[in-house]
Image (tube, rainbow, N blue to C red; front, side, top):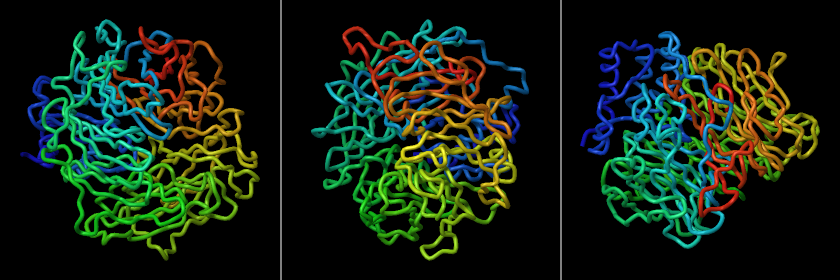
Length: 610
């Protein structure tokens, strides 16, 4: 079976043949959607939780393509941004939208957690496909027997012509529970050809790794494989090769997985995933055939955390650095050798104010960056709600990828920036900080002119505090707290609100930030990014504004947010799930026979939350 490696070189050649500058965008092999399931011969464009955690900004296209041999995420990210620029140059503009919620689809009693993400699969990065492009959501289900893995296609309801006459379609819906009390608590990962998904099922005291083969082809209306209310049950198989079959691998019988999404190394066909007992596991094969199995040689599994709170984040694999980076619930950041782990971590650094309770943990995965301003050493960014640095509360901390346990790179005021504290002197607010993002200037030039954006709290705002957005520059390649006017704004006046992980996208003309926020309330907001941040309009119930939409009131407001590429005909959207049951700006997503107030999967436009 061909590896994915060769096809990245085919991508580069295909770009030139298509007349697209190599400095711009990576295309896909030109295979019809009906052939997509005939083995892994097509690389589409999957976007999942991991897309924002391995970055190569400011690099030449040939360097990015070379790095894509190791990990296609580098190429995906370059493609996503450059298509928007190419469309702008060619005069392609997205169609105008009506002022409304584009769509909301019932998820009944299921939702994607606050710091987890749906996944989007796009068959062709240069165009939309009503049937083959889909959004897939792994759901934590609060009650009842319903689907916990849902796929929605016909996404582009405002395209011309509109997909499915303007209505999204639940193309497949599965109840994947194999164990009593089983839940999907973390993010789903699609295969590069879009024919399979990998995910973890967690019970109160165990965790299981699944690979599910999706219907082939993806059903088009009026066909479907299950519904949210009447889901299909996958057949059991050791080798996940037949549509509708699902393999089950026991990861751990004595520990659940509440926070660690699987990272899939596509070229090695290997997954890495943590558990709440502090162990990191390696699984292979995943998508390319054969029965997934735990690796138990070469120092696997790895004992990462032995702290009081061992809950691990998702791992981030950076094979440029030869390391896996992962955090724990006590506030420690770890590196693990990718090739010779020896059963334990390579290095440990204190980032959060360990043992000081809520908010100190690293709850979202770190971000690994190959920065041209730090060309010899990749940089790692970790997020905590209460820093180990004296005088700093919530924080973003930057470390070189080769940090050691007894390193001169400990978190200090020289590489950590303040995201607010209860008393202004560094005490914890008791809230979590989720993963931040970078602006488009960072993507263009790295830290030379770019910024880090992160959501923390109003400094000296009490415990809990109101949420605050911050934007930080870099000095000589290192995060700097020397911000300029307009580099922060107070998000709302609801104490205890946390932001979802942040999502940024540049559409060729405008750089935008998207995030959910909420506790006793719930909002989806956007901010325009220039050299500063625009403050979103005040959120109120009713018609959406260009920068704010109300969602059901519950902690977090929304799940993490995934986006479309900036395309010519409908593909300019954001996708998320609500964190509570109820309407979105007055638009209910309920269906006949279901709950009157279900959770919703929602699509909004990027250019004005409509």
